[in-house]
Image (cartoon, rainbow, N blue to C red):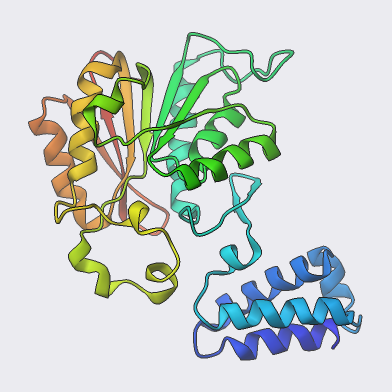
Length: 303
């Protein structure tokens, strides 16, 4: 099978699952992985023949994709903030809208003029100017992206899943980025005591009630970790309430909270933080025009 034929073979095999653009993108990713060749090489060498081993790997990938398994899990890789991260079904697949949340934080830090962008002689060098906690870190994508751009900040990531923490630590090692990943059930107040007081708290927490399971697409419901998707009760605001309470005592006076939210929960999340006494809550849309991000300032001027 030649490269051009392989591309068509994958696209045709996924016709009943994905639209044309998605099929083409997935085919490109699979071919890059199976051949270890660049996108440019594949585009310029469509008559290049795959080896028997490469063709077998391609067919195995397609078989898994036809069961609705996301391509990121099939290939064990996802791109986030110019980092190639390892992912498996212990963690959520990093999404582009989460990159927007990271970029919001970076712009705010830059506007404040903190000296955390310059890399020191060793990446582990830290400053007391900025401390960041990522709650429900999963693959570590948010924490690692922030530490990558703000190398002198001190960054922590916590998660209740040991399997997820293993993925996050693996990504930290592969990217040579030092983040302190801790095992913490954030809903357990006694376990919160191990977490630091920080200037920025960021989170993309679970917010889907269990009752909404049946509305999920099979590529999400059947493969992505339920503990990262669903709240353990029918209260979609459960984690936001816990974050609001935690931040009252563990967020610095000038600190800020940055949260990813479901578009249908925007009013409820904003109202929750105002009811909890926070003075400044900003709702922001993502690139698709959906209400997907919230910033909350604790007191003072905020980050």
